[in-house]
Length: 259
Image (cartoon, rainbow, N blue to C red; front, side, top):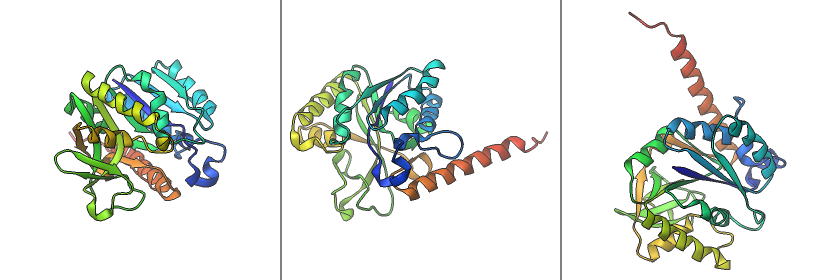
């Protein structure tokens, strides 16, 4: 199984933190970057054997960081998006279209998932296009909201909060030759339309739905299984959560086992 990570963006909402560094290489306070923490979960999931990273802004820094993992035997390659300053991640995904010759996952470079999110999605879902979602009490303007019944009906930040049933968490599985070909065909159509140059890659699903394809939801618990970094507050919460898990792990290891 292959995973495509979209990490070409400039991360401007984090201000000075990304003035000379891509968002995915922000240090999370434990000696590992956001991307490295993501790679750890990918490796521990044991369902992904190849990583493709689409880079752009400060891409040479990501390539330099990945050399260590390549030397350790991890199968990683990078694809450069030269249009990262004037396009959004739909075009980054289009540049990776040649990698879609087998079942694949897609995620963003600013997401973190527990290993169980990857393994559960791959093991539970076969032959289809599966959009990972999470439900919560309310949604805001920045959430990638979802309207759904048994299948996904629409994915967009512009969906009114009152109409949203869930939130897309930025992880997708495309499984089976028929699904892969339908996905690539819709991606190609959007890439050829100038109106979509600066759109999110999740627009592919809206196009597929328009053409009659069934996009299936796969639900995970947001507070436990995934997190995303867009703003400073997101970063602080992520660092706090990772440090808490590290402390709990150390406490567990230091607690004497009873006979």
